[in-house]
Image (tube, rainbow, N blue to C red; front, side, top):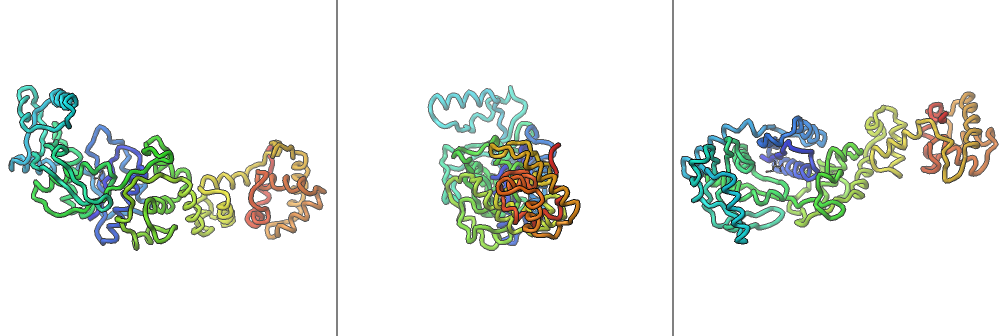
Length: 441
Ligand code: GLU
């Protein structure tokens, strides 16, 4: 089984989504189940309803799960495993106070040596501290694993010590809950962010001391850097999946982008189903990748092009095919749904003819042409006419010529003084002219 294990402690980051999609793809390739495990063990940091938000994002991206579990439901199992380890002498109670450990850390800093827990401290403060934690008794001098992306990774003895598995309130730590659940759900392959590399030997140690010997494969994903080359933080808006969706990026374009990031792919534009056919995690580059908004915008346009007019119209909240057609046309100038919507809204809003366009006042001509078009539209239905016929009538009846005709015409039809060719636009707007030809009073 493969799993994605989000913590409901913050917004879904594109790095999380990248891990989710890779786990999903591998589950499909291996024909194994895909589990979502909500890691809700950090009660102080859990945010109400974040779990539902994460699930609805996964659903929207088509990353459908076979099973869903909340880690806190397994607390009693985690505690049973901790008791088993204590009985076997592989875990022990540690009564050290926070202050004591802090002073030991300071000592290590002063001596310029790495801080390591010393098992002989365990009961020094048994009298002062009625609430012990439980630590796994580290017996390793060296540990290593082969990462599918990063290659062979080794941990020396100064990186390994007896670490906490149950807190003083009996709640399992992330590493313990994670290692137990990966074991209970028979996880075969774990893809996650590289911030978890140092947790991997701990989780392997827990499973080893529980006599669980299944070899789990690991792939740790390099971090995603912001466009400035610095680590992308929560403050970078585009790192939030919700933000990208709200800007009008399509889920399929975001997935395409994340799968292609630092990767060799057989085609540039693809969907999830295609990626399942060729995806190979070992092709993901080891080094961090920069988030490239331009590329995401390009892929968004490409995925919009794959939509037909009726699907495009639905995304814009209508069943009117001409709006879908108009939207496709605007792909020449716009990349996101919001940008396209803004352009379409401008067409259907009263036009501000008193604005200076290109530093020039066209208001008088606009007014003349507006009056002409109103009369024209009252006398004739242009819903099936071609642009030439409409233009000819408007020019003749207004008496305007050249720029003094074309600019006002464009302003009255689109709300802007430049943009796409009017003859291309006309077929999609001719049935709406009555609504379109309006000015701000
Ligand atoms: N809850 C952890 C996270 O969101 C999961 C890490 C893992 O996949 O083991 O980073």
